[in-house]
Image 1 (cartoon, helix red, strand yellow):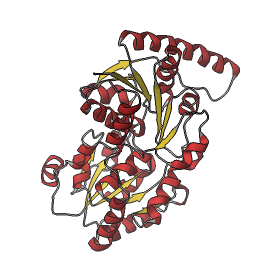
Image 2: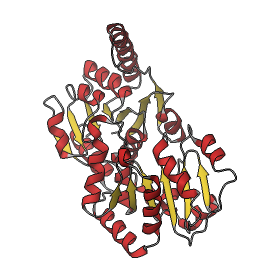
Image 3: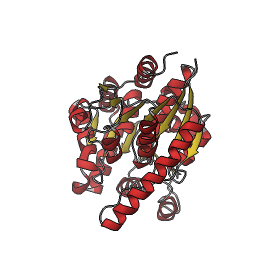
Length: 363
């Protein structure tokens, strides 16, 4: 019997893409999937392009200070819960899976008030505020890292499952990708990506590498929409062997083109790098709770799969020199890629789908 499963959350690719991976795995088991999120954030752009119905709900972000702001937040959250209740009743939801981001709280809390079974998935070592709240009312907590279990309140069972990756990430073809990006499939290629929103520090490294007069490799630079025009201007006229893309929703092709990746160290990004098996230079974001990205990155560094650069210690020239060294040493780079592959898991989404189907969605 088909059940209606609601995915809730978003804001960044670290929430949206694991959610979609789990959603597709649940679809494969015959369930009807819907997605509740913020129409103005990443999920509002990405989900409508899939075959999963997107339902926009009011977004309420927790204020950093001030009694008036917190009072307004409380009223806004109440309104969002009430609206979410209406949506869940209208679509006859059988289950709600919160994936983090502040927009995930209203649907999960609404499900609790309606007695609809609910679970959360936490992608990072240090849980966000929404998941810390929702864990108190969840029937099940799914974790990427076992260490997170003690950092969440509530009595719901914990299962460490990893960070879901869509298996389609492996389907990119280098020859086709090279044609699409206007690059040479036979040349070493650096992929630079700052996440779904872009990252200024990552972009600075890419600009410096693009302008390196001794560069003998190509660069595929996904700038992020916010920074794209600025970078196009900074690199005008565009150097040979450089492709600039503002946003890429076909990351399988970008990864297929890559021999080395310079990026942040969010859990979903690292899950993709290890599932594929790619060498990387990781520049953890310092703007995250408890500096959890550096912890993620150090784990890959420890097994010889990545090089880690701490942003506060960044030396642009040294970073560019290290990129050139890695791209000029195929054997060392291939060893890093193999070490990354050893850490990868492609079956997390299907395992989650099986677990949820058995516990909550059985006919």
